[in-house]
Image 1 (tube, rainbow over the protein chains, first blue to last red):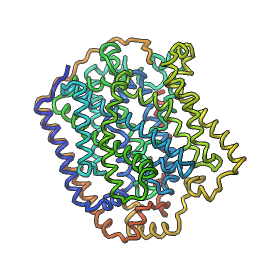
Image 2: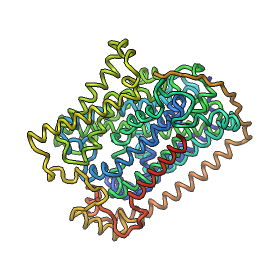
Image 3: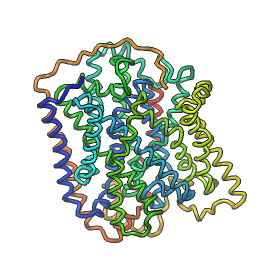
Image 4: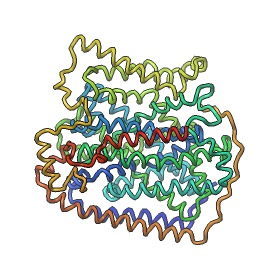
Length: 532
Length: 99
């Protein structure tokens, strides 16, 4: 039963969102042109880049997903972010971002064409668009649950409201999406998480928490199996592989990394603020999920377990904080629009400009991008009925990533390391992983021949274990194809892959021109130096 | 997909008694912290703007293209590789602590 918003809630909600709007208005005065905005974005120091990175990576959906996963799998739900997504940040920082940076690409799919071929770029772009729409649908579902359980709307009214609000926030993008504002959003998100957790623990009593719940706040050694009959550490390893691609094949995340003033700032931003912030923000929601299993046990409600977060908001938070919770979700919904922008940029740059209309003025592509963003905001709604049939909202993401999308991460990981992997190896490897194993086991057989799937052991068919096979098949196929192609055509000349293959990522040599600019800029304290 | 092996004994939920007027106290805290944070960022960005405006065309183009270099004379702790290792240790420590 919904609680509804009281006067104090509405006042706090209006104050927070109004404050964001006023803040955006004042900052907009500094931005006279899109170039100003872009360049201002590129002179931001590493700590602002890092805060922005964390803020865009952790949207409305990322507050409920850890709760839903931890409800089912103990603290393993936190594994979505720590350390698998964090491992993605490491790989990005260590050598993937340097490789992308030096190519001057705007989308990460474009890099696939530089390193491999056009087919791989298209495969990467389309599957990323698919994945992003699923991520958007998770965030929209989260907001719809919030409106349903806290404000008192019906679920589908909540969906419409969520789409309308995120559409509004996207249109008002310039007003709200000032990168510096993300710092405050981030801090309030962390405050909201830990405050809600402390109120939840106070509500069940600290003694009960330490005695009953604390033993469950573990990654591996808690009182049940993540997958029946198989060791938890192995399930965790599968979870790690499923979540590893989240940061790497996330165009939104990569584009933010590429908007730092230098490669060095970008790498520093990825590490110092980004990683601890992820942990600080996501951990309380994971612990809330573990507690939720005791307060709202399985069977006491229908639908995805992610709802426990909203049950707690409804049942535990005082007047004022509830309004703040709603405001925090509404503010974070700007990120749904940001994700729509990402899908739009992949479509516009990697498909439309590449195939449909080449050489048009930049303003034309901007217009196409805006129209696409509007259409893209509607697409995630189509996923929602399927998404609600899973025991937790992230289930669809995990199933799709394990079966089809996750393998794209392999070409990104191995491509910048060596010239050994040939042009055609990536697309053949990814297709092999998805077609030979991922799709048949995850999608086709469960519908065509469910008995066959039931007869197979869990380590072959469970979502947690499918990535072991798809990733292995992909890498083996890439090696075989490369061996054959290198034998026939010879290895790709090192000159062709100059600055694409990063053999020593810590030794960064600037080109002559960039070196001059960089040093002049440093002298003027403009970019790159510690003074910013 | 999920097999619930143990149905936990439900814990009763007893939210703390509401503090009278909490929402107004919270509103004041929110407005004050928001004001301070925004003011600080406003001053910071305001100082940055003249620097951006005074850039030469060459410098602007350089930034648009993306400049890459390892700044010289920086303290060792500002090296991204140092932080990669530090964060790796943090994550491993977290994993071990909550194993």
